[in-house]
Length: 197
Length: 197
DNA sequence: GTCTATAAACTGATAGAC
DNA sequence: GTCTATCAGTTTATAGAC
Image 1 (spheres, rainbow over the protein chains, first blue to last red):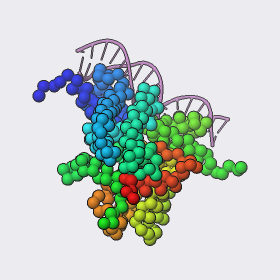
Image 2 (image 1 turned 180 degrees about the horizontal axis):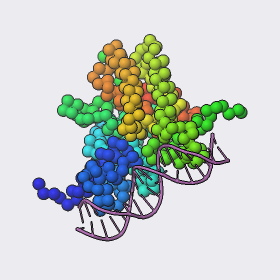
Image 3 (image 1 turned 60 degrees about the horizontal axis):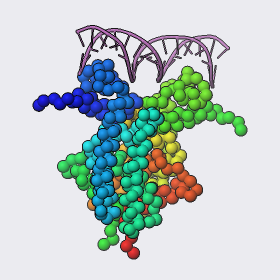
Image 4 (image 1 turned 120 degrees about the horizontal axis):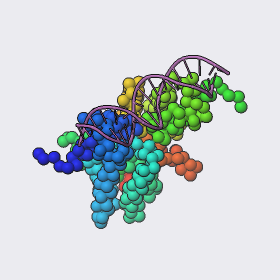
């Protein structure tokens, strides 16, 4: 098993992401990251310019993946119900692929937005919103979705329910990610009320 | 307008709560709190034993209020649909009454649970969950709610959507908190799909 | 690529004057 | 109740040896 170049960087980023997600970026010290990797804190600066740079790299790859998947979903021609379902699936797949980055984004966004360098996160959030609003508004226009609820409010309610699943959902053979996507979509599309058959 | 005793404590807690909510507990320094109040950091320790003690007081009054309101809701005899609606209303009223505490709880729970003193927050979360599960499970048993979705998953999806509204919802005359409660309940009970009348 | 050593700034908190 | 002054510990980050 030959080690690739850049392997070391990845090891460090993995440790950092786990710690950032568990205790928050501000409360995680470079010493703790170095301890976890098994080196001294000064050595981290051979690989990264700063603690911020580590956060940046973690969040960037997360957002890149998210944007790609959303673009793929929106490129389909399909019923708004299908597209909404596919956005849920795409989101949950990103949660699965980047659980720590997702948690950092959810927990520390306010803190990061206070740092000049991370102001680009505001645009990222806006692009995600645009994707959802496109689908929701199309559904309303087609008469597939109700028109008595504000689409931005619908988006925000669904967004938070979906992304915060990173805090509690652990996929298992009995309840895999695909099943959570089905159940979440079903709840949002059809509601909790029992069918009076 | 006579100043009550304890007024000063409240002033400090208000500043602290706003800063904790905006940047996170770990990233907020006692100096920043003191600056915001208009005193020096050492003077804070005449009113509080530690930074933790401030967080503790902010979260305690938040959780006390929440628990009281949930108890009042559950003491009613009513249809599960009504009780679910009332839990939503109670939650959003607590968000409105304690916006900063709500945000601190949502953003910094992981960090706080890492501090020995805040382990009681785990129980608080469990009690909230119990209240919701009681209502959801009763609704399923009565046949009012669907029985094909796991009640714990339903709870978590609704919980995160409701509580995270603290991050974006600002009540206005045109869209007051009661309206958000109606819309949220309506989405969860009836879903997004248009009625085919 | 890691370590040694350390700088420079910042942190929560304390003691005692006023 | 606030300020002055300060402590002891911690923080991110750097310079240079190995």
